[in-house]
Image 1 (cartoon, helix red, strand yellow):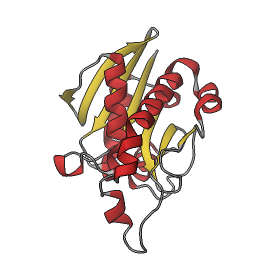
Image 2 (cartoon, rainbow, N blue to C red):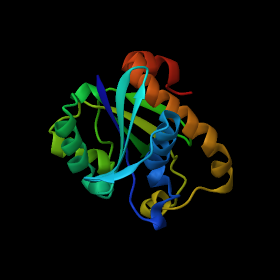
Image 3 (cartoon, helix red, strand yellow):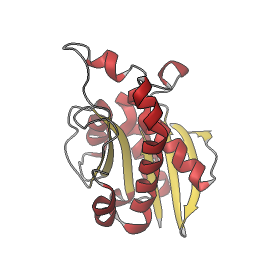
Image 4 (tube, rainbow, N blue to C red):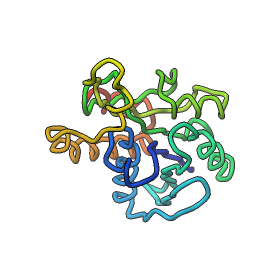
Amino acid sequence: MKYLIVGLGNKGTEYENTRHNIGFKVADKIAENLEAPFNSTNFGWMAEGKYKGRKVLVLKPDTYMNLSGNAVKYWMQKENIPMENILVITDDLVLPFGTLRMKMKGSDAGHNGLKNIQEVLQSQNYARLRFGISAEFAEGKQVDYVLGVWNTEESEKLPERIDKFAKASLSFVFAGINNTMSSFNGK
């Protein structure tokens, strides 16, 4: 059984510690837990590991957020991974900071990375793990906020939250979506 976990973010050092790159940070932690290094490959960086006998591919697309669907589709097809074994990790403005919410399907909620994945895959039926970044910005400042760095308080709490999200991602692989949602959502 194969799984594809996709952490969304933007390539480049200028984006490295921004809120929008939380998917990359969680992907890094998952790869660390699997003791699987990232290697440069088609459409991004890939880490391959095993978790409880299952092959796990962890992808950080290098397509920039708005074209993430191309990377997801390529690796789904290349590795013959069914839609139900895909998990996309992304930031979410609606959720309070650090809130974890996993869902089996749903709308893109205005997120450009999810919007592109949905367009390319022609489906909303893939799991997504949303990391709450809250919406603490003035009107018209959403882009600056999302592409901004974490504040001091958030930075202090990030390691624990990233660890929790990595554990939830691996729970998805082994325990399935329903058990994982019961165990981790809102925690």
